Length: 152
Image (cartoon, rainbow, N blue to C red; front, top):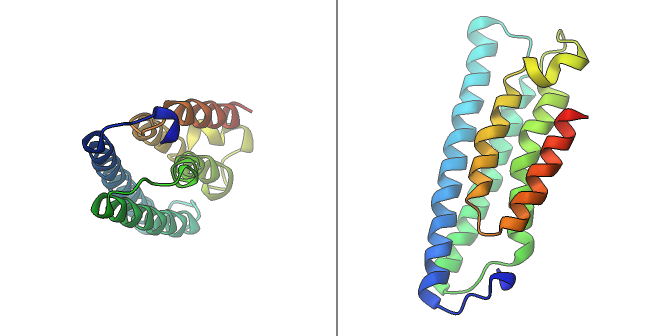
């Protein structure tokens, strides 16, 4: 948060509260997506990898840890380290990219996986969530990286 040069303690607190709400939304989305994948596999017999749901639950655990760090920063009135925000944004963009690459159905031709798997739909809500993050340059880098990976 150093590049924003925030002088007001109240503004810093509001920024962290906004980050906390954003993380709640990301956690809710990841949980719904994991449940949907598990239901697709169990109920409809989809050939998607069940490891995808486990990967999403691991990502939820990471987001819960980040939420804990944001909560501590709010209570102690300290700033979050820049590396934590960068890692969080990068991790949120990597989720759908890894899902397309490794957890989609093996019956899909590799060239069509990016448009035929539900994992690609996860990219848009996560990029929107990242757009509300506190550092706009992080959003630009992460969004471009995610788009380049899907198109390449």
